[in-house]
Image (cartoon, rainbow, N blue to C red; front, side, top):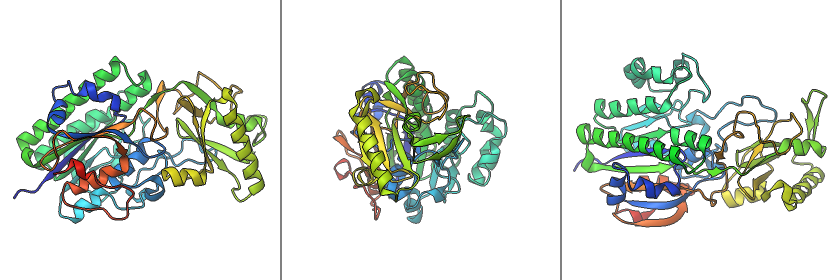
Length: 431
């Protein structure tokens, strides 16, 4: 009996609303005709890329895997570094499980995987805004030497300059790896451009459809590569997303509001002197961090202030959670004491400059895009999960479930289980 294989194709910001269009595309439709799906997959909170990717491979919420945000946020921390090392994840991953059970593993452009114990590993680790000509400096010592030695000389050009394209780099490697390594047993391939297009143009438009067509062609290349050089009959294919997105309706500069009410103090240049409460943006949600959480008088004062602005419709605050509520309801923990989210989808700005609480013209970052994420798991747009292969039933549709169930489901395709996780396998999808 031949060994089973798994190929996961992850599309950043793949939304449930994409499903009907995907069914029409020549390569994706193979999955719908022969497999099963979970229509609405609720991500973890906040629905940011790196926390979600960590949950996909661990089956755990943020408080257990330890990556609460893309960035390692801090008060007045400029250009905060991003989580990027496997050691940032505080629990076992699918890659650990599969490798321990004798499967060869490959990961291309997966976040938070620097120095991971993966046989063939090319992490997503070159800084997002990097436009220089030496991306090798970020990959060296973080990626697998075998991949760098074999492919960087040929495809490293895709990572250089202003027109750099991580997706071109990823796809070039993916096709070659399947051919040159006779298809690793476990292979995760992550694509970024759908997320970028949605940020720039909104969640549902012709630009999004054009990008989905590109991803369809890329998936077709992977499937054909498996047919030519791998073991198509014994491969389970999975297409999944990490989060949805929402069109941004409003904006609020929460730190300016805190400053106006005396909870943040600045000098004449607008530079931070001291604070009682400070806001970190998680794009469509916001974290309020107290300087001294043990000061119950100030904590209560700030809680009452937040309840007051939630009751005032001009601020569009639809949700307010304490730290304890956020952890109990969503498994969220991090540098936060309260969590806010808009009634309408609203981005949170955190600069101390200016005086416009509701600025439309915003600096680069989470705040300038037409659509974004970081919102509550249950809010549309959710993401989705499609599976097809020898261990997957045909025609099963689960309407709504949680992202933490994905890892144990993929493990169960191989008869494996994951211990001490927050998710449960979708056994109804499996034969």
